[in-house]
Length: 209
Image (tube, rainbow, N blue to C red; front, side, top):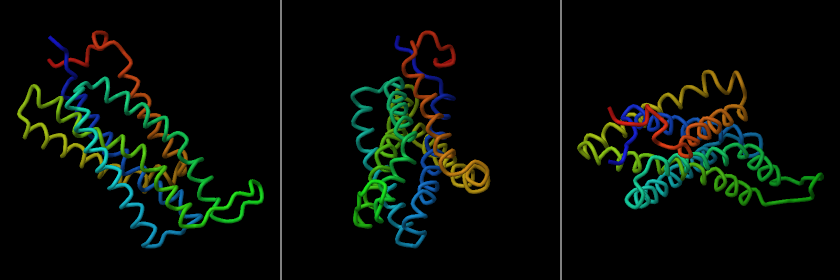
């Protein structure tokens, strides 16, 4: 019989992914602010970019989950998203700074193009995080009711998003800065994603009790 991850592990992943999305979304505004400001237009596009990325992740994640409903596969996706987040601050800063004349590189992008490029870079790892809920729902539904599984995962993901909304505003960004805040999320994803490369039989808390 194929071993399945514990419900606690699944719920934790749901909450952590929800928190990660909001932490990155709020931190993104800080990355872009020195170059594009914090106007309603900027915030609207950040929020829209995040929502589009998540929608794509939900769709693709659902299709992948039907074909490979394996937590180990999902963890590898989280691992990749963490690696991308590690370089996000430098990449976004480089693209955004190119919106003005850059004597050091001589590269210049129109402001709109640089802003769109920055949002696109941020959207890629967020899309990968969007794959988490459908994957977890699929795995949980194999042993529990689908409605109960979807409701529990959605609730935990939303709760994580609430925590991820306040945490960077009241502690992480003021204390450690924007770059370190994004890196904390990135390393968390890398660490939990690394679980996907471990043999399942060697992880005692991986199984249902």
